[in-house]
Image (tube, rainbow, N blue to C red; front, side, top):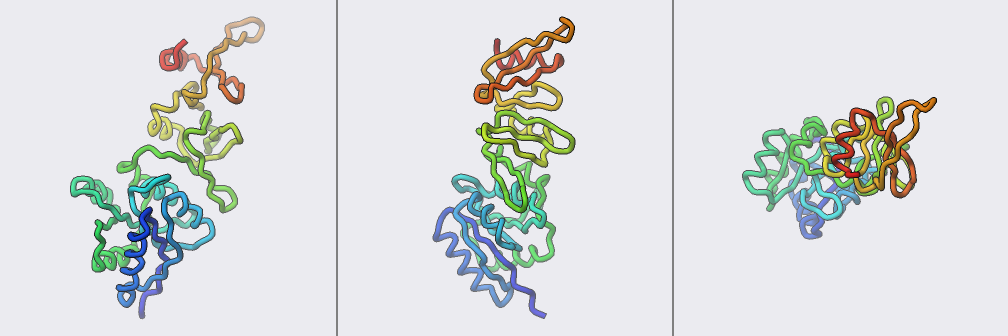
Length: 253
């Protein structure tokens, strides 16, 4: 029995590269039947397409504007039915070793039809790449992801004022609204050490959002506590006694 056609999304910022991959898929159709369900110029466009398009395999370039292939794969891995990812890269031999160490499939440019057919054959039975496999080769993300009613919301890291752990979720606060993330506060702290500082065991605050400190008087005139004031919301966030010395050292008086 012939294998069923795979629904393929092609993601590359260069139109000739997208067209070459589409032509190569046509060349190997007898061996690996596919149907191209879309083409995108970067990871942001591709994520929007995934909201309304069922995809089996994504051929994605690594270096792209707006959102590169690895960050795209990190977000796509959180979907209810994550697609199989095959990276297309012009990386040199040493950089490619990182993909091999983490069992992540890749194609070197210029892509050859034989290698593409082999990668698609592997994708038919392979498990989707996980966030844990991607993290060792990833650069810090430029966006966080929130899924609501089947729609993917992308939150620019630069817009996040603070991150607060609540039950099993993390709330990301921007000027506009709050977003619920399925992320770990500890992992976010480790991923963005230059942007966020921990002020409490359950809260990270953007360094750029802080405009000053205020001291609150405790109940019945007892010992008070320090808070940070945010620039746009005017909101006060309490600093734990344990974190106060570090916060003051990092953010200044």
